[in-house]
Image 1 (spheres, rainbow, N blue to C red):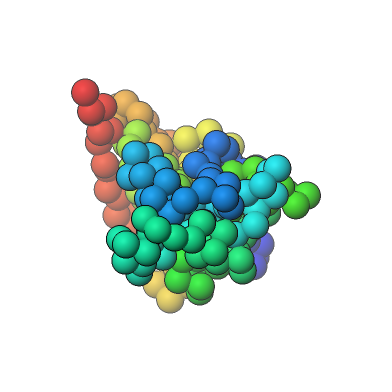
Image 2: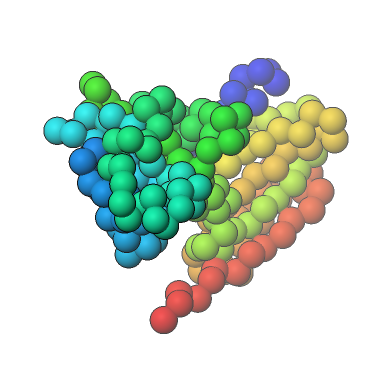
Length: 221
């Protein structure tokens, strides 16, 4: 039973994949461009890295750190992007999971991965994309109800019934505490939370240990 439920990381039909959250129109540069052009492009578009492409094929990548390591005189006089780019490019496929992308970034200590399919650049995924995905999964922007229930006999079957609710975003099992964390999206705040708590309390085998409501955030003007 435990293995079956723990495999359900999200209440949705499938895990979030890279294609769901990547930027599909990444800022790129050609290999013949000057380093000053790369620096200007990064500043204007507020990006820290540029895939270097030719006919849609990734040849390398150049980062803000690479440019900062070059003197201004050398940048003005000198080599093209092709001479300074990193030709060994870490990348990922669009059908990989977001968890895999995050693990790869963490292991390799990089802030982004070009997304490549059939040898061509189709997007880029950054640490900011992953952070936004995490916030959305936990209902941070639309409001969220986090409910911790005791992992006792019969509780998992009841949680399985709750998975029919479209508002249930995430289920996590804490084996050490014998608890399960359920995260629901609550775009209306307290009215949604009240309804969900009442429905959960109707299950006799479901013991609510604690709950926490995060109200929806007002959109920035």
